[in-house]
Image (cartoon, rainbow, N blue to C red; front, side, top):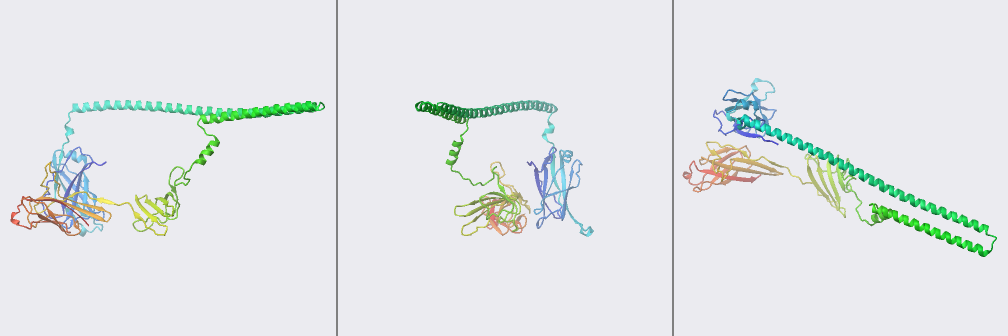
Length: 499
């Protein structure tokens, strides 16, 4: 988060020893890393082109009470617009409390060859600003002590609340541990019930088989022993044995079915499904078995992925084949995220994002082989914001409609670029003009073509015209009875056009 307090001075490289207008700039002696002075350096041709390779900018400040700063190098904010800045040192602000500070900016050509013939230094006009004493410095010692006590009490209260929250979290962790233990015990008991039921069923079946075998053996022995008896007795004994064997077998089978039913019911009552039910439920479901991601839902990473032949899915790749190109026409070898879908008739749609640049493209490959090519979905936008400009030749700026009700705007210009379209805006608020006067100089080529706009004037005057010339000059013309126009008349308006 930035809370800079920026003041902009427009300094022109010219040989006129006159101070620039008092802009009412002021800082406080408690400003720390926020008192910022910006300077827009220009000459008769427009803004100076500044870089660390060709020029170095310095500033020097001196307070009315004798305090002085070091010779400080300025930071380059925008070399094309000639915009530099400096953040005033807190110690210097405190030393200059309740005084007017005078400053001056210097630029020097970097003499890389060390030849004295190439030494060039330009000194810009002097400018001033105020350093005031912050109101908080006037707070009484009693009030400061009361505030310290209040914050100490607040600190104690907050620390107590933190301890209470830590205790509550600890109790919550105990409850979670208890719940986990209860769940684990429940699962253990349920598994034991299932194991005991299975063991009981197995034991019953084994015992039934043993009983049947014993009965058969006993019956066979009796038949052998009574073989010499009459056929009727043998037949009766055999029939009785067979009847008893059948009854015993039926009893064992019924007991087994009962135990199996009890086991299945126990499984269902405890939230489980039987193997038979699970097989039936899965067979009845209709679901898509094709996976677009891995088991965790993440994109599949493939190096050298060909976007025109890869199966449908969500991918991340490097060294991508047939992907969107960089601005210079070369393939992007970095990370590319791609979403590939294929219609039922084979038409392929690809959405690809160049991760390092946050730029997204789309392409469609039709079944007849037609390739739409990559179309970018993202658009870069730049906006300079409103940049104030100064008037010249005695013209007064920002004078009209400045009360709280009207909230009139100031003299400023603005450039907005979106893709291939450049929008330019101009605001004019001036008076003390004469017919044909050049009342301001904007950066050269601010207007790519000559522009001409009708501007508002006082009600008792006919319409005025503002000419915007590619050299950067703003000119006012009054084409009717020029004797009607007086210096106190004004012009006011905002204009917009596109390159």
